Length: 392
Image (cartoon, rainbow, N blue to C red; front, side):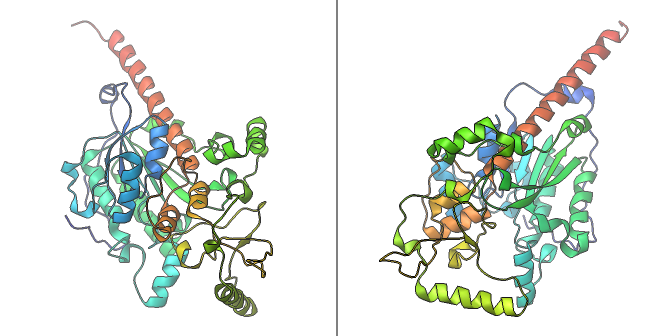
């Protein structure tokens, strides 16, 4: 099946879907909530929803290297290209989750495509129209809830028209939406702001849902190696501030230190743009800092997050270094036992494309609580109605 290609001012032809009645809602069971993991990457969404008590029944990811990492950690290989998978071939589920490709909407992605004379957003036929594959699956499977993640620039892309299309079509399918931009910097040492779209067929679930606050985010696994910091976080969660030093390894291979040639180039590049009044340049961080956003392009030169180093015999110029893949894993909040089975280049791409696991974990818990609360409320109202009904 091919991707549906639309211009931003057009609507996808989908059936309208009514909200569930009390009777249909009472058909929920007390089993785990089943979820679909679309655009799965290396499984950040899956980790989060599984921790919250969900059960993954289907996953899809087209990138073969990401499939390897996913399979190494979850014991199953995701299905491939979602555009080639029919909705009828996907299992029924309560929730659909997905971080559909962000490059067509990101600031960096749009700038690059403009420079190359290429289309972006929905005009990018290889990635931009993948949102409509989510819609065609929702139209058939009608899960009770959805969670979509993307870059915050999605909201302003093309003057807001792209976002209008997304919201309009989700609402036409019957979803009551809650939308917010959440920054992971309150739980992880990076400035990573992402837009989350949570949707519910049951208006009661949507009404009770709240995006989590700082205190709701679970503390990342890496703090177990910083017992003093972990104790600080537990004693006063509201005032705890992440810092880059928490994720840094004590002994790092010299190969991650920038060469004199690359370091000189990055400094010259920054100085050139600074004189021109631009803000382009590397991001140099110390142990007490919050890093810039880790992106999929980190493998190229690591310039967005460079770690300060002291002068030494091996490094007399005190050249900074890249993060190691293991440090990137921590920066995204993945657990300590998460396996990295690919090259450094692929690992950088995979973690840069992933989600901040503690953030999604807290959102997942809130979503499942809202679904459960709505289910119990519906059940109570249905039983009360049944008792009041006259005997036949």
